[in-house]
Length: 528
Image (cartoon, rainbow, N blue to C red; front, top):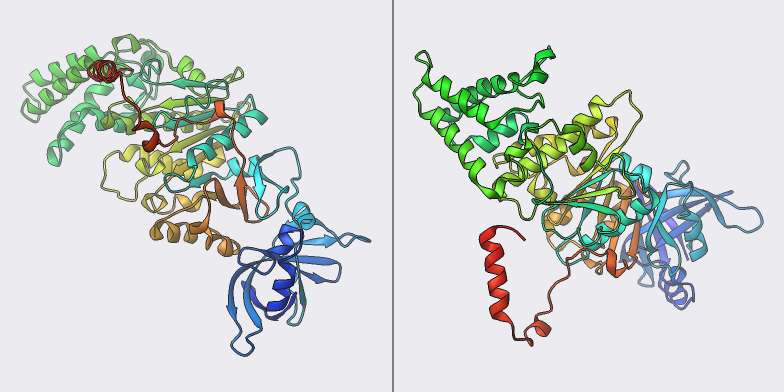
């Protein structure tokens, strides 16, 4: 269908006659029919080896209007099967480049099946590779989770359903797995009701004493500037004394203010009062009063009862970790942490505590039989924002650390976001696999392009043109970059994220009084 006329290590250019593209467009094989178009793939024969490339761009040849000049990116190479000419043993990367004048050929659906054939048992099928009708798209779970992944897409592109699809496939393959998902909108509880455990403010029971000192500061300190530094010093001294009162602390030689040792909130307020009454204190009583008032507010506010309850003083650390991390999984390998009903000012601290527990568990469990854990963060730009001056720095620090170091300890991170440009710089580049759905914002598109490998450039240009439930996947989880039409998920496994039909719902009327009564009751009681 054409010849190579310019070659370089990064990409090359080929000449394609217009009439050859026109002739191929009538072929019954959809892959061959698309040959020569942007996003299609071509193959080049060199001896007993085939090299595969992707068409990135097309322009009319100025010297001859009957030809097109196409930029191609090399993807990988495979051997030629003796007797059939088919591609076998395909692998990423190119070891031998073709010379100018070498002919190029269209890639068939049969070739696509060989190129994207899954090797090994760790693959899950998630959809169909574009433009074929039957070639299945697979993800290598070990590579996907071993080096983190990111799922990106604008609102309304099917991002939540795609996340549920991938997680369902992983759970079906690994019913004894350990997955923790942060769900800020309460979407996923319906999707994983049969194979997951759902926790919200009614049953999470997160003990306050599991917080480290930095997390305590974010919850208990309300001052700023120099006053905050004074309050921090007072809180550190009093919190350490409160932890030291526990019997568990008696035999501990390395007790610190961060040690997850239970303490009573009443002990903490008593110690603060005692310190306030000392004549040799270095400041007035105002910082002590601020701390006491804040602790009393948290104890009395029913919205915080899932965390600051007097019932959470027992040493329940082992039971809590077993429950949240699914150790053992008992047929429900995923925990859904629904934070939608939590007060917004404490949500980031809750996510920070859970993320840090996962990472700390992995560190201190070295030497034990490995139990890798996957942490999935929906709306990840909330917790790892590019703005370093925003509140909630503890959650940002721990998620950045997991992104950089987690794979060494068996902790995988999955980030889901509609605004990748709002993510902290460097976090997206730590994700070995990027699954990008349609992105409407130019800034987001450029941000993703900067994070993706060179060979995926031809695919990236099609991000704005993707249909709903289509995505571009590149990185460690796939052999070469691919465009995928994702599978439909069964009704009972979909998240509750469907958009309301205004035209249909605005035709209905009746029962508004009861709706308002029930809604206001839940509103006032801060519960569902």
